Image (cartoon, rainbow, N blue to C red):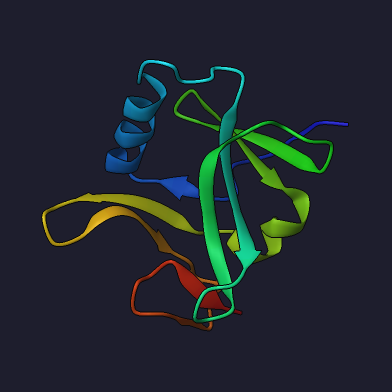
Length: 114
């Protein structure tokens, strides 16, 4: 059963532009959606997941600026209110995560504890 919800996370304009750029790359699998989630690991205990993936029966869907996104229902607790940004500079390049639910984060910004 698929559930659609209000977007639990937000993306900056730069992050939206980078996701759309990736989606327009040759060979992109248009059947996949943008997965936002977490997994165990990293120096603080949990690591963010941001990739393109297939929808499963554990997922809820939401849309941000015409980008279809999926999130495992159990991850909402960890990610609600998080903002995802894209840094394109020479010193720091990649997606960054500003998570109000994190009690601590690591220096690289991709790992957190709750």
